[in-house]
Length: 273
Ligand SMILES: Nc1nc2c(ncn2[C@@H]2O[C@H](COP(=O)(O)OP(=O)(O)OP(=O)(O)O)[C@@H](O)[C@H]2O)c(=O)[nH]1
Ligand SMILES: [Mg+2]
Image (cartoon, rainbow, N blue to C red; front, side, top):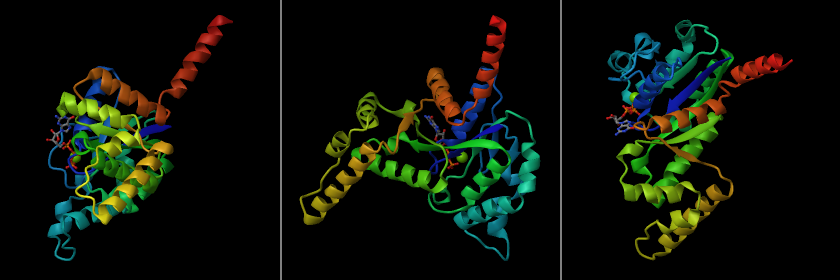
């Protein structure tokens, strides 16, 4: 078995920073964590990738091509489909090391995860190569600090979960940037309590539309609460302990380390006899 995190989320949510921080954390705790760059338009990241899609195809190739003439978003989708058609390239780059742990740093176009099929096909390919994989959806915490934004962030997470059909972890990134007041408020959101979230939704006038709209928001809030549909884990990359905890949560989801535990236990049992 091999292990992977599909690191996804909106543009600028901190995916590449997360990947490089986790790779560095791996070095600190003597764990091998590799990163693969899957963003064909990436300009800068702070890690040494074990594979980089830009070596295969760059989004500029698709935009400058006389026949294709894509814009940046269409070009990106073309690149991911091109990668799927040339999966041998990725297979070679990934090698076949048992117990490998790889982060896939994905592009920031949210439509790739909410309704297009290219990412799903990529996931299927990785599973066929024996990867235990989960999606890690990053949301910039600064975009969910009031009630209505929190609900819309939650709905975005939910549509990604439904589309990818993978074990899934939602992360609130950039916690280090949050003020103390905002942090306290967020704590109330994180214990799903739709009444608190709803109390934080501003009503601009009591027009018939606003009243209806509020009812809808309440219904969605209640649905999320009653079914515990979406949970977020806050991540502060500046806290070593927090990074370790988040990694452990994800390890459990992809069952990383379970074999090792069993092996250790067998050994201990043998010792007793
Ligand atoms: N303070 C702080 N800044 C962060 C953190 N994570 C990311 N940033 C900053 O946010 C910006 C975007 O970060 P990236 O890691 O490039 O985000 P991304 O999701 O990879 O962006 P795209 O690949 O363009 O979609 C950069 O300026 C980062 O320095 C964080 O945990 N704390
Ligand atoms: Mg990036």
